[in-house]
Length: 182
Image 1 (cartoon, rainbow, N blue to C red):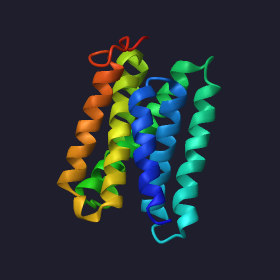
Image 2: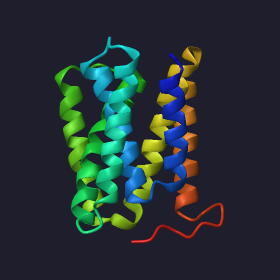
Image 3: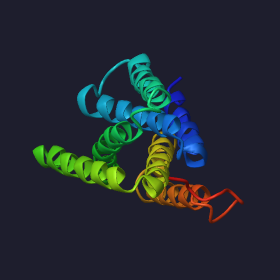
Image 4: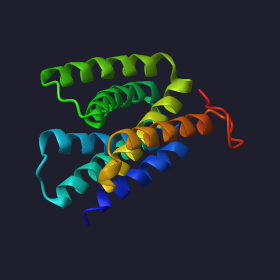
């Protein structure tokens, strides 16, 4: 049961690497990553069902939000981008083993704002890059949690390779997939 969350993270990470340029998939993946970060930051010593349930619940919320967002695409994408920026910064700090106190949250806010602006003005490639980064982070967190000796450099490398592969695939550079559309 203890290995269920890391496996879930790896599976969601792999899925988002392949279909993350679709808003519903990116929303679900960002929701899962947000749930993992919130559990780690705010509820560290919880039962297994909380550590799995919260990411799954946030993933479902992100999925539903993405599916319902056809009309408000750019607004929802900016919100998802902002949340993604915050969680990406917090996840990177966690992977690096850094705890900067209040600066964690200041950096997270700046990252969220930067990603929200990037997404708002560059929708074509922003979803490809975001899905690659989020998928790579989920895989890195999953690998690091599943195989404790692989935490640190190996999980970072796994995440970077996965992120690069996801961006290359969704960007149309490998696999014969059409490049990201606007």
